[in-house]
Image 1: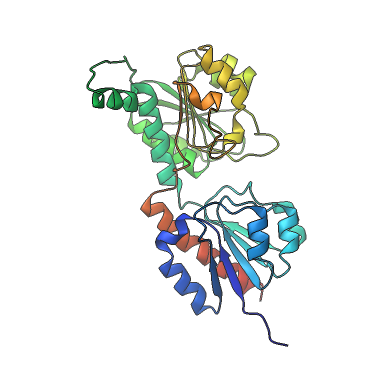
Image 2: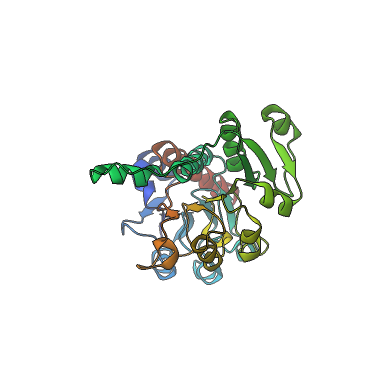
Length: 318
């Protein structure tokens, strides 16, 4: 009986831009590469069809890998996350099945951090709105606010949160990190950042709140009606992490009724949102199409790192 060729499935759409070196690495290790050429995020059924036979490794983006998909991919040995967040992968079931999983830590931290800071400027100065006004040959102005001297709450002190904190200290903002697992006194001292365990007090005092943490049972909808009610009416919420961190129905009410000033996100619970979505339709809600890691530098780093991670896991499993 002829043995099936060893295969690796690569799902991320942006991987195509820097695929040459990773494909070279995989083929040199004896793997046949199966690419996602659909131009869209794969569904569970798409992955089942592509990985049903011979696929030993998957480099996955935001495409879903729940238990039923992992169970059906009988040859699967390793999953390499193209990025950091792994909430689209059933990690518990993967461990039970002996499937190794690793993410590309640090590859997109700078790109996401820079976007978060960019959204702060956009929210404080209404840049896009002014640009479009002038392009319509009008000269109307909305008064903005400075970021200098403002208090920024960084919720999540991982690599991205720390990159945001560093940049905002450079803007002479007061920065406080909330993260029960944060333990880096050298970083605190080096950048003049504060740390607190009092989430409520931080939310009440912050002028801007930026989210940089994964979605878990504890963090889903952590920004809810109760939290939004405690924020300043002039405050700005930034979310470049995961849409599910925010209760979008509560955010809609808070923005509509002026309980907070602006929310700017790069993520949403449903991507893309449905046409006519009431939250997206609000003028003080800003949404970009999940482009935090979509820079040439980050994409190239993620492509290479996720490939290296996959090859290491597959080699260890031989």
